[in-house]
Image (tube, rainbow over all chains, first blue to last red; front, side, top):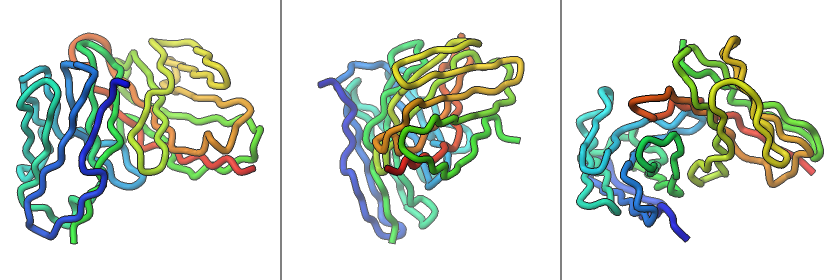
Length: 112
Length: 112
């Protein structure tokens, strides 16, 4: 089945210790997104890619970076996680010019 | 005022009840209206979408858009315990970027 896969599903990191979350897709979609979702809040868009064109949301902290080495993979790097970065991180994909988004299961990040 | 307002609930109903979930919005440019269902510790999945005003029915689910009032609804008939989840509304304008604006979600609990 075509899908969006996120690894790991659960990640525990220490305050200030860099962490990388990964996302892969078999849907061959051109557009990929990274969202941060905190409890009972709307998903907050961090980054998105149209193919290799990177788009950074204006209010995404500098602490967050992203890489998309090819169509199938995308990574979210948090350089120095703070306690406020504990959240669910969602990866999503979309065909070109489409409102539909296909989400992965998410990575729940805990910062100790 | 947020662009999309959604009551977080929780909304608790008995099995078999008709459920009404709602969102209001402020941006008159929104044309595509989506409902996502998110089970606990999972990513959102697209449930239904509607373009512009009107109703759309899919099995036990009906999506309704009233652009004049900037108000959208999702009705669930004959609700089941398996419908227990968080329901997020999302909306986007046509043309250009299709990146949606999400509501914070309404938590629904259907008890047997």
